[in-house]
Length: 325
Image (tube, rainbow, N blue to C red):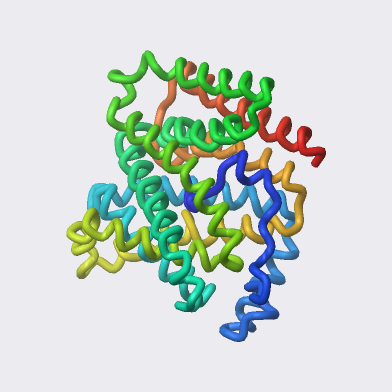
């Protein structure tokens, strides 16, 4: 998951919000800080087809999660998620260079709530993938934004899609307590709730703050909230440069790189196409888990992933059709 937190099917089928009036868009031509480097990066990203950007972002997120699992023996899930969020906040701060102004003070409560859902969502996700396969954790988490999309729609056909997703969860039920750790499943469900909460809060923050500044504030708040959970484990980085590089790789792969790619893609592709591509996350997580973590899945688990992915595609397509877009 995400990264961004990482973005959900229903929420990502919406067009990106414009920047706040009176503030500049954050791109290579507008930013006076490091303009040459950012401009060069912008040209490279612009040369890539938008679907490729989204697919690379999806793979990056799941590879980052797999790398995080490899850090658990040294840092534990709590230490890993704290360091990942902390480094991501620093990188986003360097990129967006947010200002501590009146707008920040006026919406401090909203930003603290954003930080809370980011912290809770990521903490639950990392605790989940420490106990159950990556593909299963992502599939269960996907139920959160999927259910939110259906709940906010209130159209009967979309309730049929959520029933299909629920059927996927039923297929996982026999493995709970056996192949699947019940606590891991519970954490994944907690992550699903957190992901749905992130959709609601981030949408509001995105309308109030230009570009990525709202996310930067939220990520910084999340890092502060996660400090009590991961500060002690982070001491393992002392005298361990390769471990630090591993944490940096997780932060880049899970947040900085995919978020930048998706931000660029959203400016140049239909929202419907983007929403459909994002539904490939559970299947991608299954493949990454098998290739990088040596995970094995039953046919029932694979069918559960297919059910949830199909439901997500159905909700996304029906949602855009209903809007006429």
